Length: 251
Image 1 (cartoon, one colour):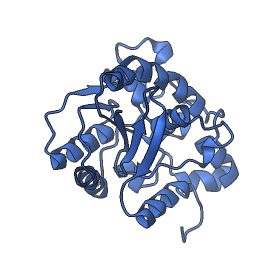
Image 2 (cartoon, one colour):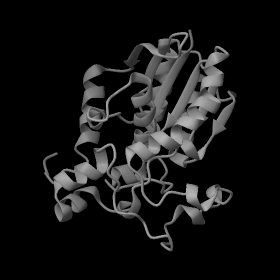
Image 3 (spheres, rainbow, N blue to C red):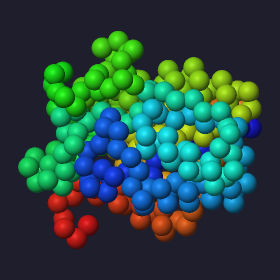
């Protein structure tokens, strides 16, 4: 049966600054580069043999895959990239400091924007200079497909066509697949794979740079899954993601 590895990109420069990143193309921080290399080391030690790679079109996910593959000595693998694997668009919150936003609107409201399934943040204005439609990566997309804000439900809707049309065929051919993407695009995929309810999905936190290995049955349903690495370190990374919007200075 095929194996699929989900890998959230390593820490980005904007993660380190605690900013809402979304579709902004932030690069990896030095810590993020180390996390990506460590992910490759863990996969190599686990004996995971990859055959094909899927990434978003955002630099942090692309470089995470590249660095991990270099460590695994499999940089030559075929790679497919697509905007449907991009991070969720955070609308007008993009570029704002998460803790400062929590101070302004309250932690409860920011938590709803960050983690609820079907509540979108305030939309970015179409004429905003940060609008993704100005980026040449998306110049061929119909304007109605370029988001101005998204909730996780929206990400599920835009991600699933790529899953069915591109990832599933690779898995059906018996390929072991790496998907290097983002916290919310991977949360959307895991929600679909594991049948996580709308009410329970807000509690799923995916740590940066930690390979999540799924063994899939003939129906491509997970028969087993595991996060690689020291369990306590993985737990601490997940907790760090959970508390990014906290106003508590001791977090």
